[in-house]
Length: 261
Image (cartoon, rainbow, N blue to C red; front, side, top):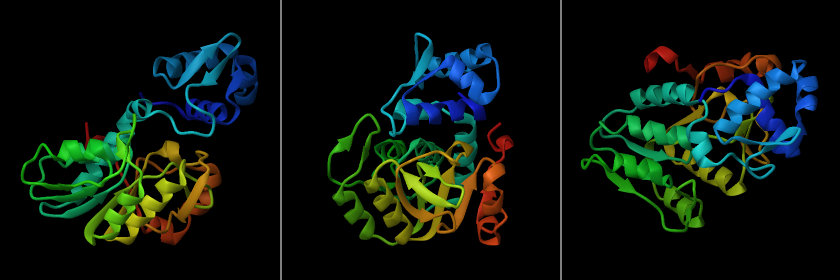
């Protein structure tokens, strides 16, 4: 499902406020209630929100990320474009740290034909995908599997990342603030992301446009920290000053949709 900017904004409002009436959303976006209902119906069909009498509520917990299953089907075209672009940057025989998230699962799926990779990851979806190629070496941490995300967020995972120095480090974020601050939904996710960036020769941040302006409570790092930023497009408005910066533009690579068509 590819959601519009307004639909992303509806999700963000509900994540903050839990329940909002249809009329209030229509007033906020200066559209008709019928337009809002169409948006809500699409989001409800994707299990991103729940319809209630007179309004709509967030399908998850306020201030928390969407469920992993919901993220797997949200902005899928953009995530495919990003994942194909990133996979094209990785040569056979490379060593890679791979973080958590649905986009990085897609990167792993697009790396499955690469040979002789050494992959260190706390993302079990990525590990299982790359494990289908028996030439690869897959290293995973101990700890408790977080469900339904199917990842390991543990001190053991951070210790594992800190034991390696690899060619590439791939990670995502929960959100990106207009000043470039990187955010996540759990402080442990921030620590693991930073461990990946610190233990690779080339760090790559993946982020579809829904991450820009998306609120997430745990902060750490800046958009200028990774060596490369792979996105499906550049947001405007309040993000213009950030993307006018030379140190941001120099890191930016835009994954075009034709790369997967």
